[in-house]
Length: 239
Image (cartoon, rainbow, N blue to C red; front, side, top):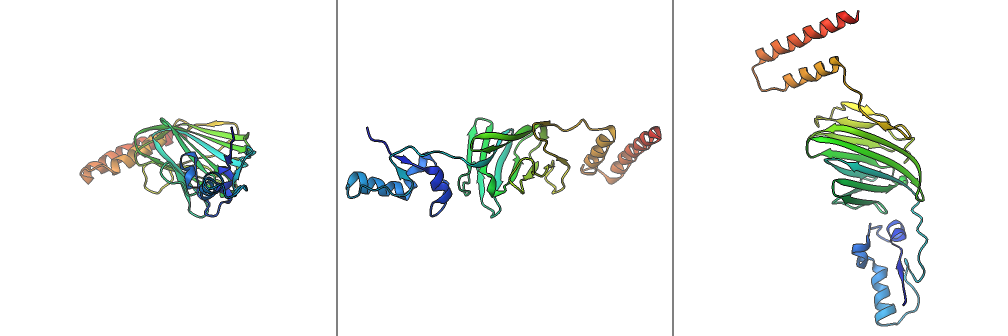
């Protein structure tokens, strides 16, 4: 039995058009079609086109970031040139997206210096695992656990040097108003959660909620005034 291999990893990284080919679209690799016609059908050539060999390639995945998302959000990443990797778009060479039920897994070369993005599609909470690998060896990890999200939530995280240690904070915009509500800093080997809000924080959220209600302004003012009275009492107790 004769066997031949197509090195998709090298093809995706160094091929002419740097497409992100996978096993299911292997016939889109020009060199593979060339091999089938010249070497198998017409038998006009005994040499192998680029990325084709009769020995199993040594798969070196290089340095990569891996994101595992458990949540009702959409996961994607963008490189420095604006190319995207997501469930529906595959523009970044050697990046990969997989879905296993509610779990989404995205891997991307560290040299792309990715900008991670999560978009809420329903109410719930999420856990995001961030892992850094050097040729399949796990060298750093951090986890954001049980973070509340909604249909309007937008979350971003930048990796300016492609590492977990150098990553910027997880920026969370709960209601999609382009205002970052909270930033969670990554910690190597740690699980990060949002601390329980203080009473003052809850009152602030309640005031914002009342401001957004479709009710008469006079009623809004009265409710806000009552909340502010409570805030004053809290401050007086602190003193």
